Image (cartoon, rainbow, N blue to C red; front, side, top):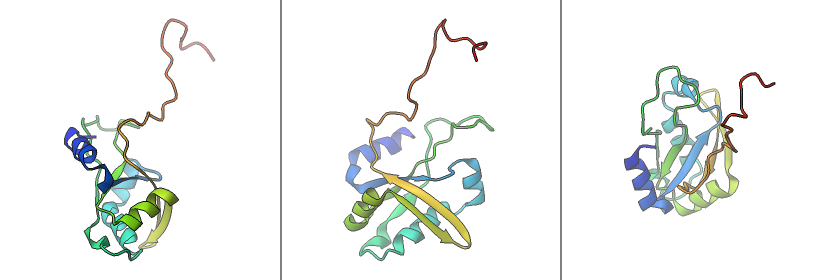
Amino acid sequence: MHEAMVKQVQDHLGQYVTIIPFGAGPHLTQNNPELTKDIETFLKSFGFPDSDHLQVANPAPRITPKAGTCFVKLFPYLLLNPPDPLHHLLLWQQTFAFQLNGQSLAFSTINPDAQARSWVILNFAGSFVTPDQP
């Protein structure tokens, strides 16, 4: 994430929830230019008091990836200012699906955590790794 966004989240952890859309990537964003507003509309439909102040922010990458590069774009969105009951529900339930304008969308929610490890389990490097091995 962009350094300014990381600092903002770290300084105000309790005010954010990370949203990771299923099927995230360039096509999801291209096919859903109003994705942030659609997620906001869905979350506001729960009817929690003070939901009118919540806001979903697009991912802001630290670097600009080369065009056409797969698996480089930043996919997590950030939810700002969810009311406490909604915040707790999002982190407890973790997975949500909804339909809006005839389209099905789904996402997972987690707490932002700078200490979380990458989904990469391990990488192999060195002389024992060669491209001719099956």
